[in-house]
Length: 171
Image (cartoon, rainbow, N blue to C red):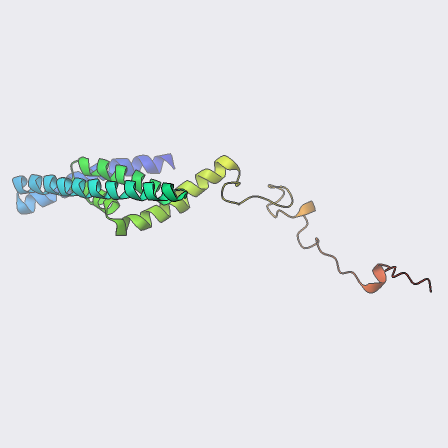
């Protein structure tokens, strides 16, 4: 996992350099610098506006007594978007703009919750925070979670002759 993260972190600047060289070859060097600066400025204005909107949503949720979970994740994504937008390059500006716009930020937030936040919380709380806990058996006894480790043998077919009902008649 760590090698993949390092590879992605090294790949982004390489893609930025290659794209900047390609764009500079087509429209010129000065125009490329202007495009990079313009996308960064527009992105930062959008990030500022979205940040204010997210803060107001957090305050409204807190005033109602609700936990602002999605809004806090949006705030973190907006901070990351600001960092991407401040980094010079077209690829980082594109990633930053994707994180700033609410329509494209929503699927990123859902994926982040599903593949990063929930597994992390589960690993730290043993499944209690998300409700993924064992209620019967022991974890690790073959992975079935059935008492005794024998799946399918936890119910019994009992006929009428197998138990005696005392209904009060002494006949």
